[in-house]
Length: 396
Length: 163
Image 1 (cartoon, one colour):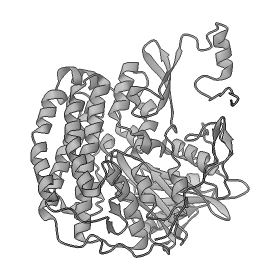
Image 2 (spheres, rainbow over the protein chains, first blue to last red):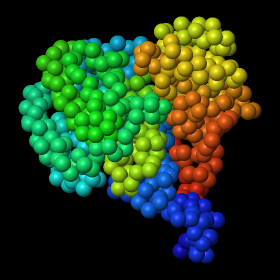
Image 3 (cartoon, each protein chain N blue to C red):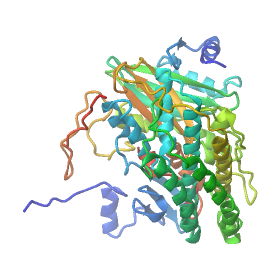
Image 4 (spheres, each protein chain N blue to C red):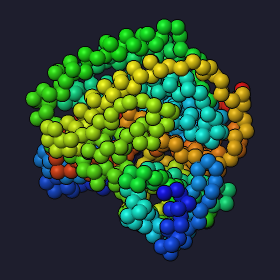
């Protein structure tokens, strides 16, 4: 039998404070230290928030991340350029296509590969499908955290359709490895575009249904309006991007303002929060921006289906990636949880010298204390849910 | 503005910064002394107006350490990369956390993974790895410790193959 050892993992208050606590002395005065997480149903993964509370009011928040750290940057340095793609998809596993796109665009920019129109259109199509699937989870779990169980089931039905489509396309339901450097893994199956059109028709009534079920539900609005207000100043200081930035009323969407992969060819309207039910940048705004973004994504998907040009999706895939040009490149794309920036440094070998992934959710977690201090513990649950984090992307 | 124009603008304000026209992305290189001033000017000058820090990366090169920061100005619709280098014997650069708040977390990550320190940083702790981890994994000479508490860490690294 092996000897058992006592494992001490530093967690929570320091040992000195525990000593005081064990002697019946309260080192915190009237305040209480509360550990929210890491295994908390409302932290969307494994996030630990150390709260200092005064009654029900939160007076200090310290986020602890890293529980899901899988050494993406370290691994990326030890594998070849194409081998990094599967790892990128494991960052934000709810939006694998969007994750891979950023990395692939970075390598293509470094290698000066120009892909053809069909590849670009298909990439946009799958990324927008994935964005809807991702927002479905975001909204569903948001409602779940607030106490509404039903919307999650409705939204997972929608997501199931998308995952089926993407499964037919790539063979996998979440970790696709479909977008490749210089092209795509393979062309679409026969009749797939028609299925996507069918999905669009199916999806159309779902958003009004969701609005009736959840968005304008009085209890839901009361719970979210004026809660966790993020001002534009805070958003910019914390480098917040994506739907969370737009919810503050800041009109910026990379797909429109700094287009990549041919987004300039599509007609859609970035959605911004206006404080319809409360203050601009509150939880309800962050929620509704995502709902409306799904409609816009649907518009893009329809246009992509209509304009699907002919072409060979493997035309520009390089034969070998052993010799890469030296240099560095920073590419960002609009992922569902904010801009995913890939900073790629090459030293000319077949492996990246350094890969840094800058994720939107990382910045969102950093901003949690700034937007929730002085609020109630119950509101903190709503705020964490509203900023829509996936800890895989935060910890990488 | 292009990165070159941004560099000229900074130089005309008396800040020591050089433009490096590397492909595909150029960058501006500050000195350790001019780094903080350059960041403040980039944020506050109305023509530059870099409102947000997008990313901050620590890098180890054979002869020096480097910090690369990507900035964005939504108002002026331009982006730029600024860099600063420091010697291997003293991997310390001034912090940007009082210029853009999010730098606090990015710098903690650079400290955690690359082992750089940031002078003036209020809360320089590990962020992704456990507090009692040994070493900084993104150093090129890093070798992982054998055990962390009761967990063995000596598994084989992934094998790489060429097509």
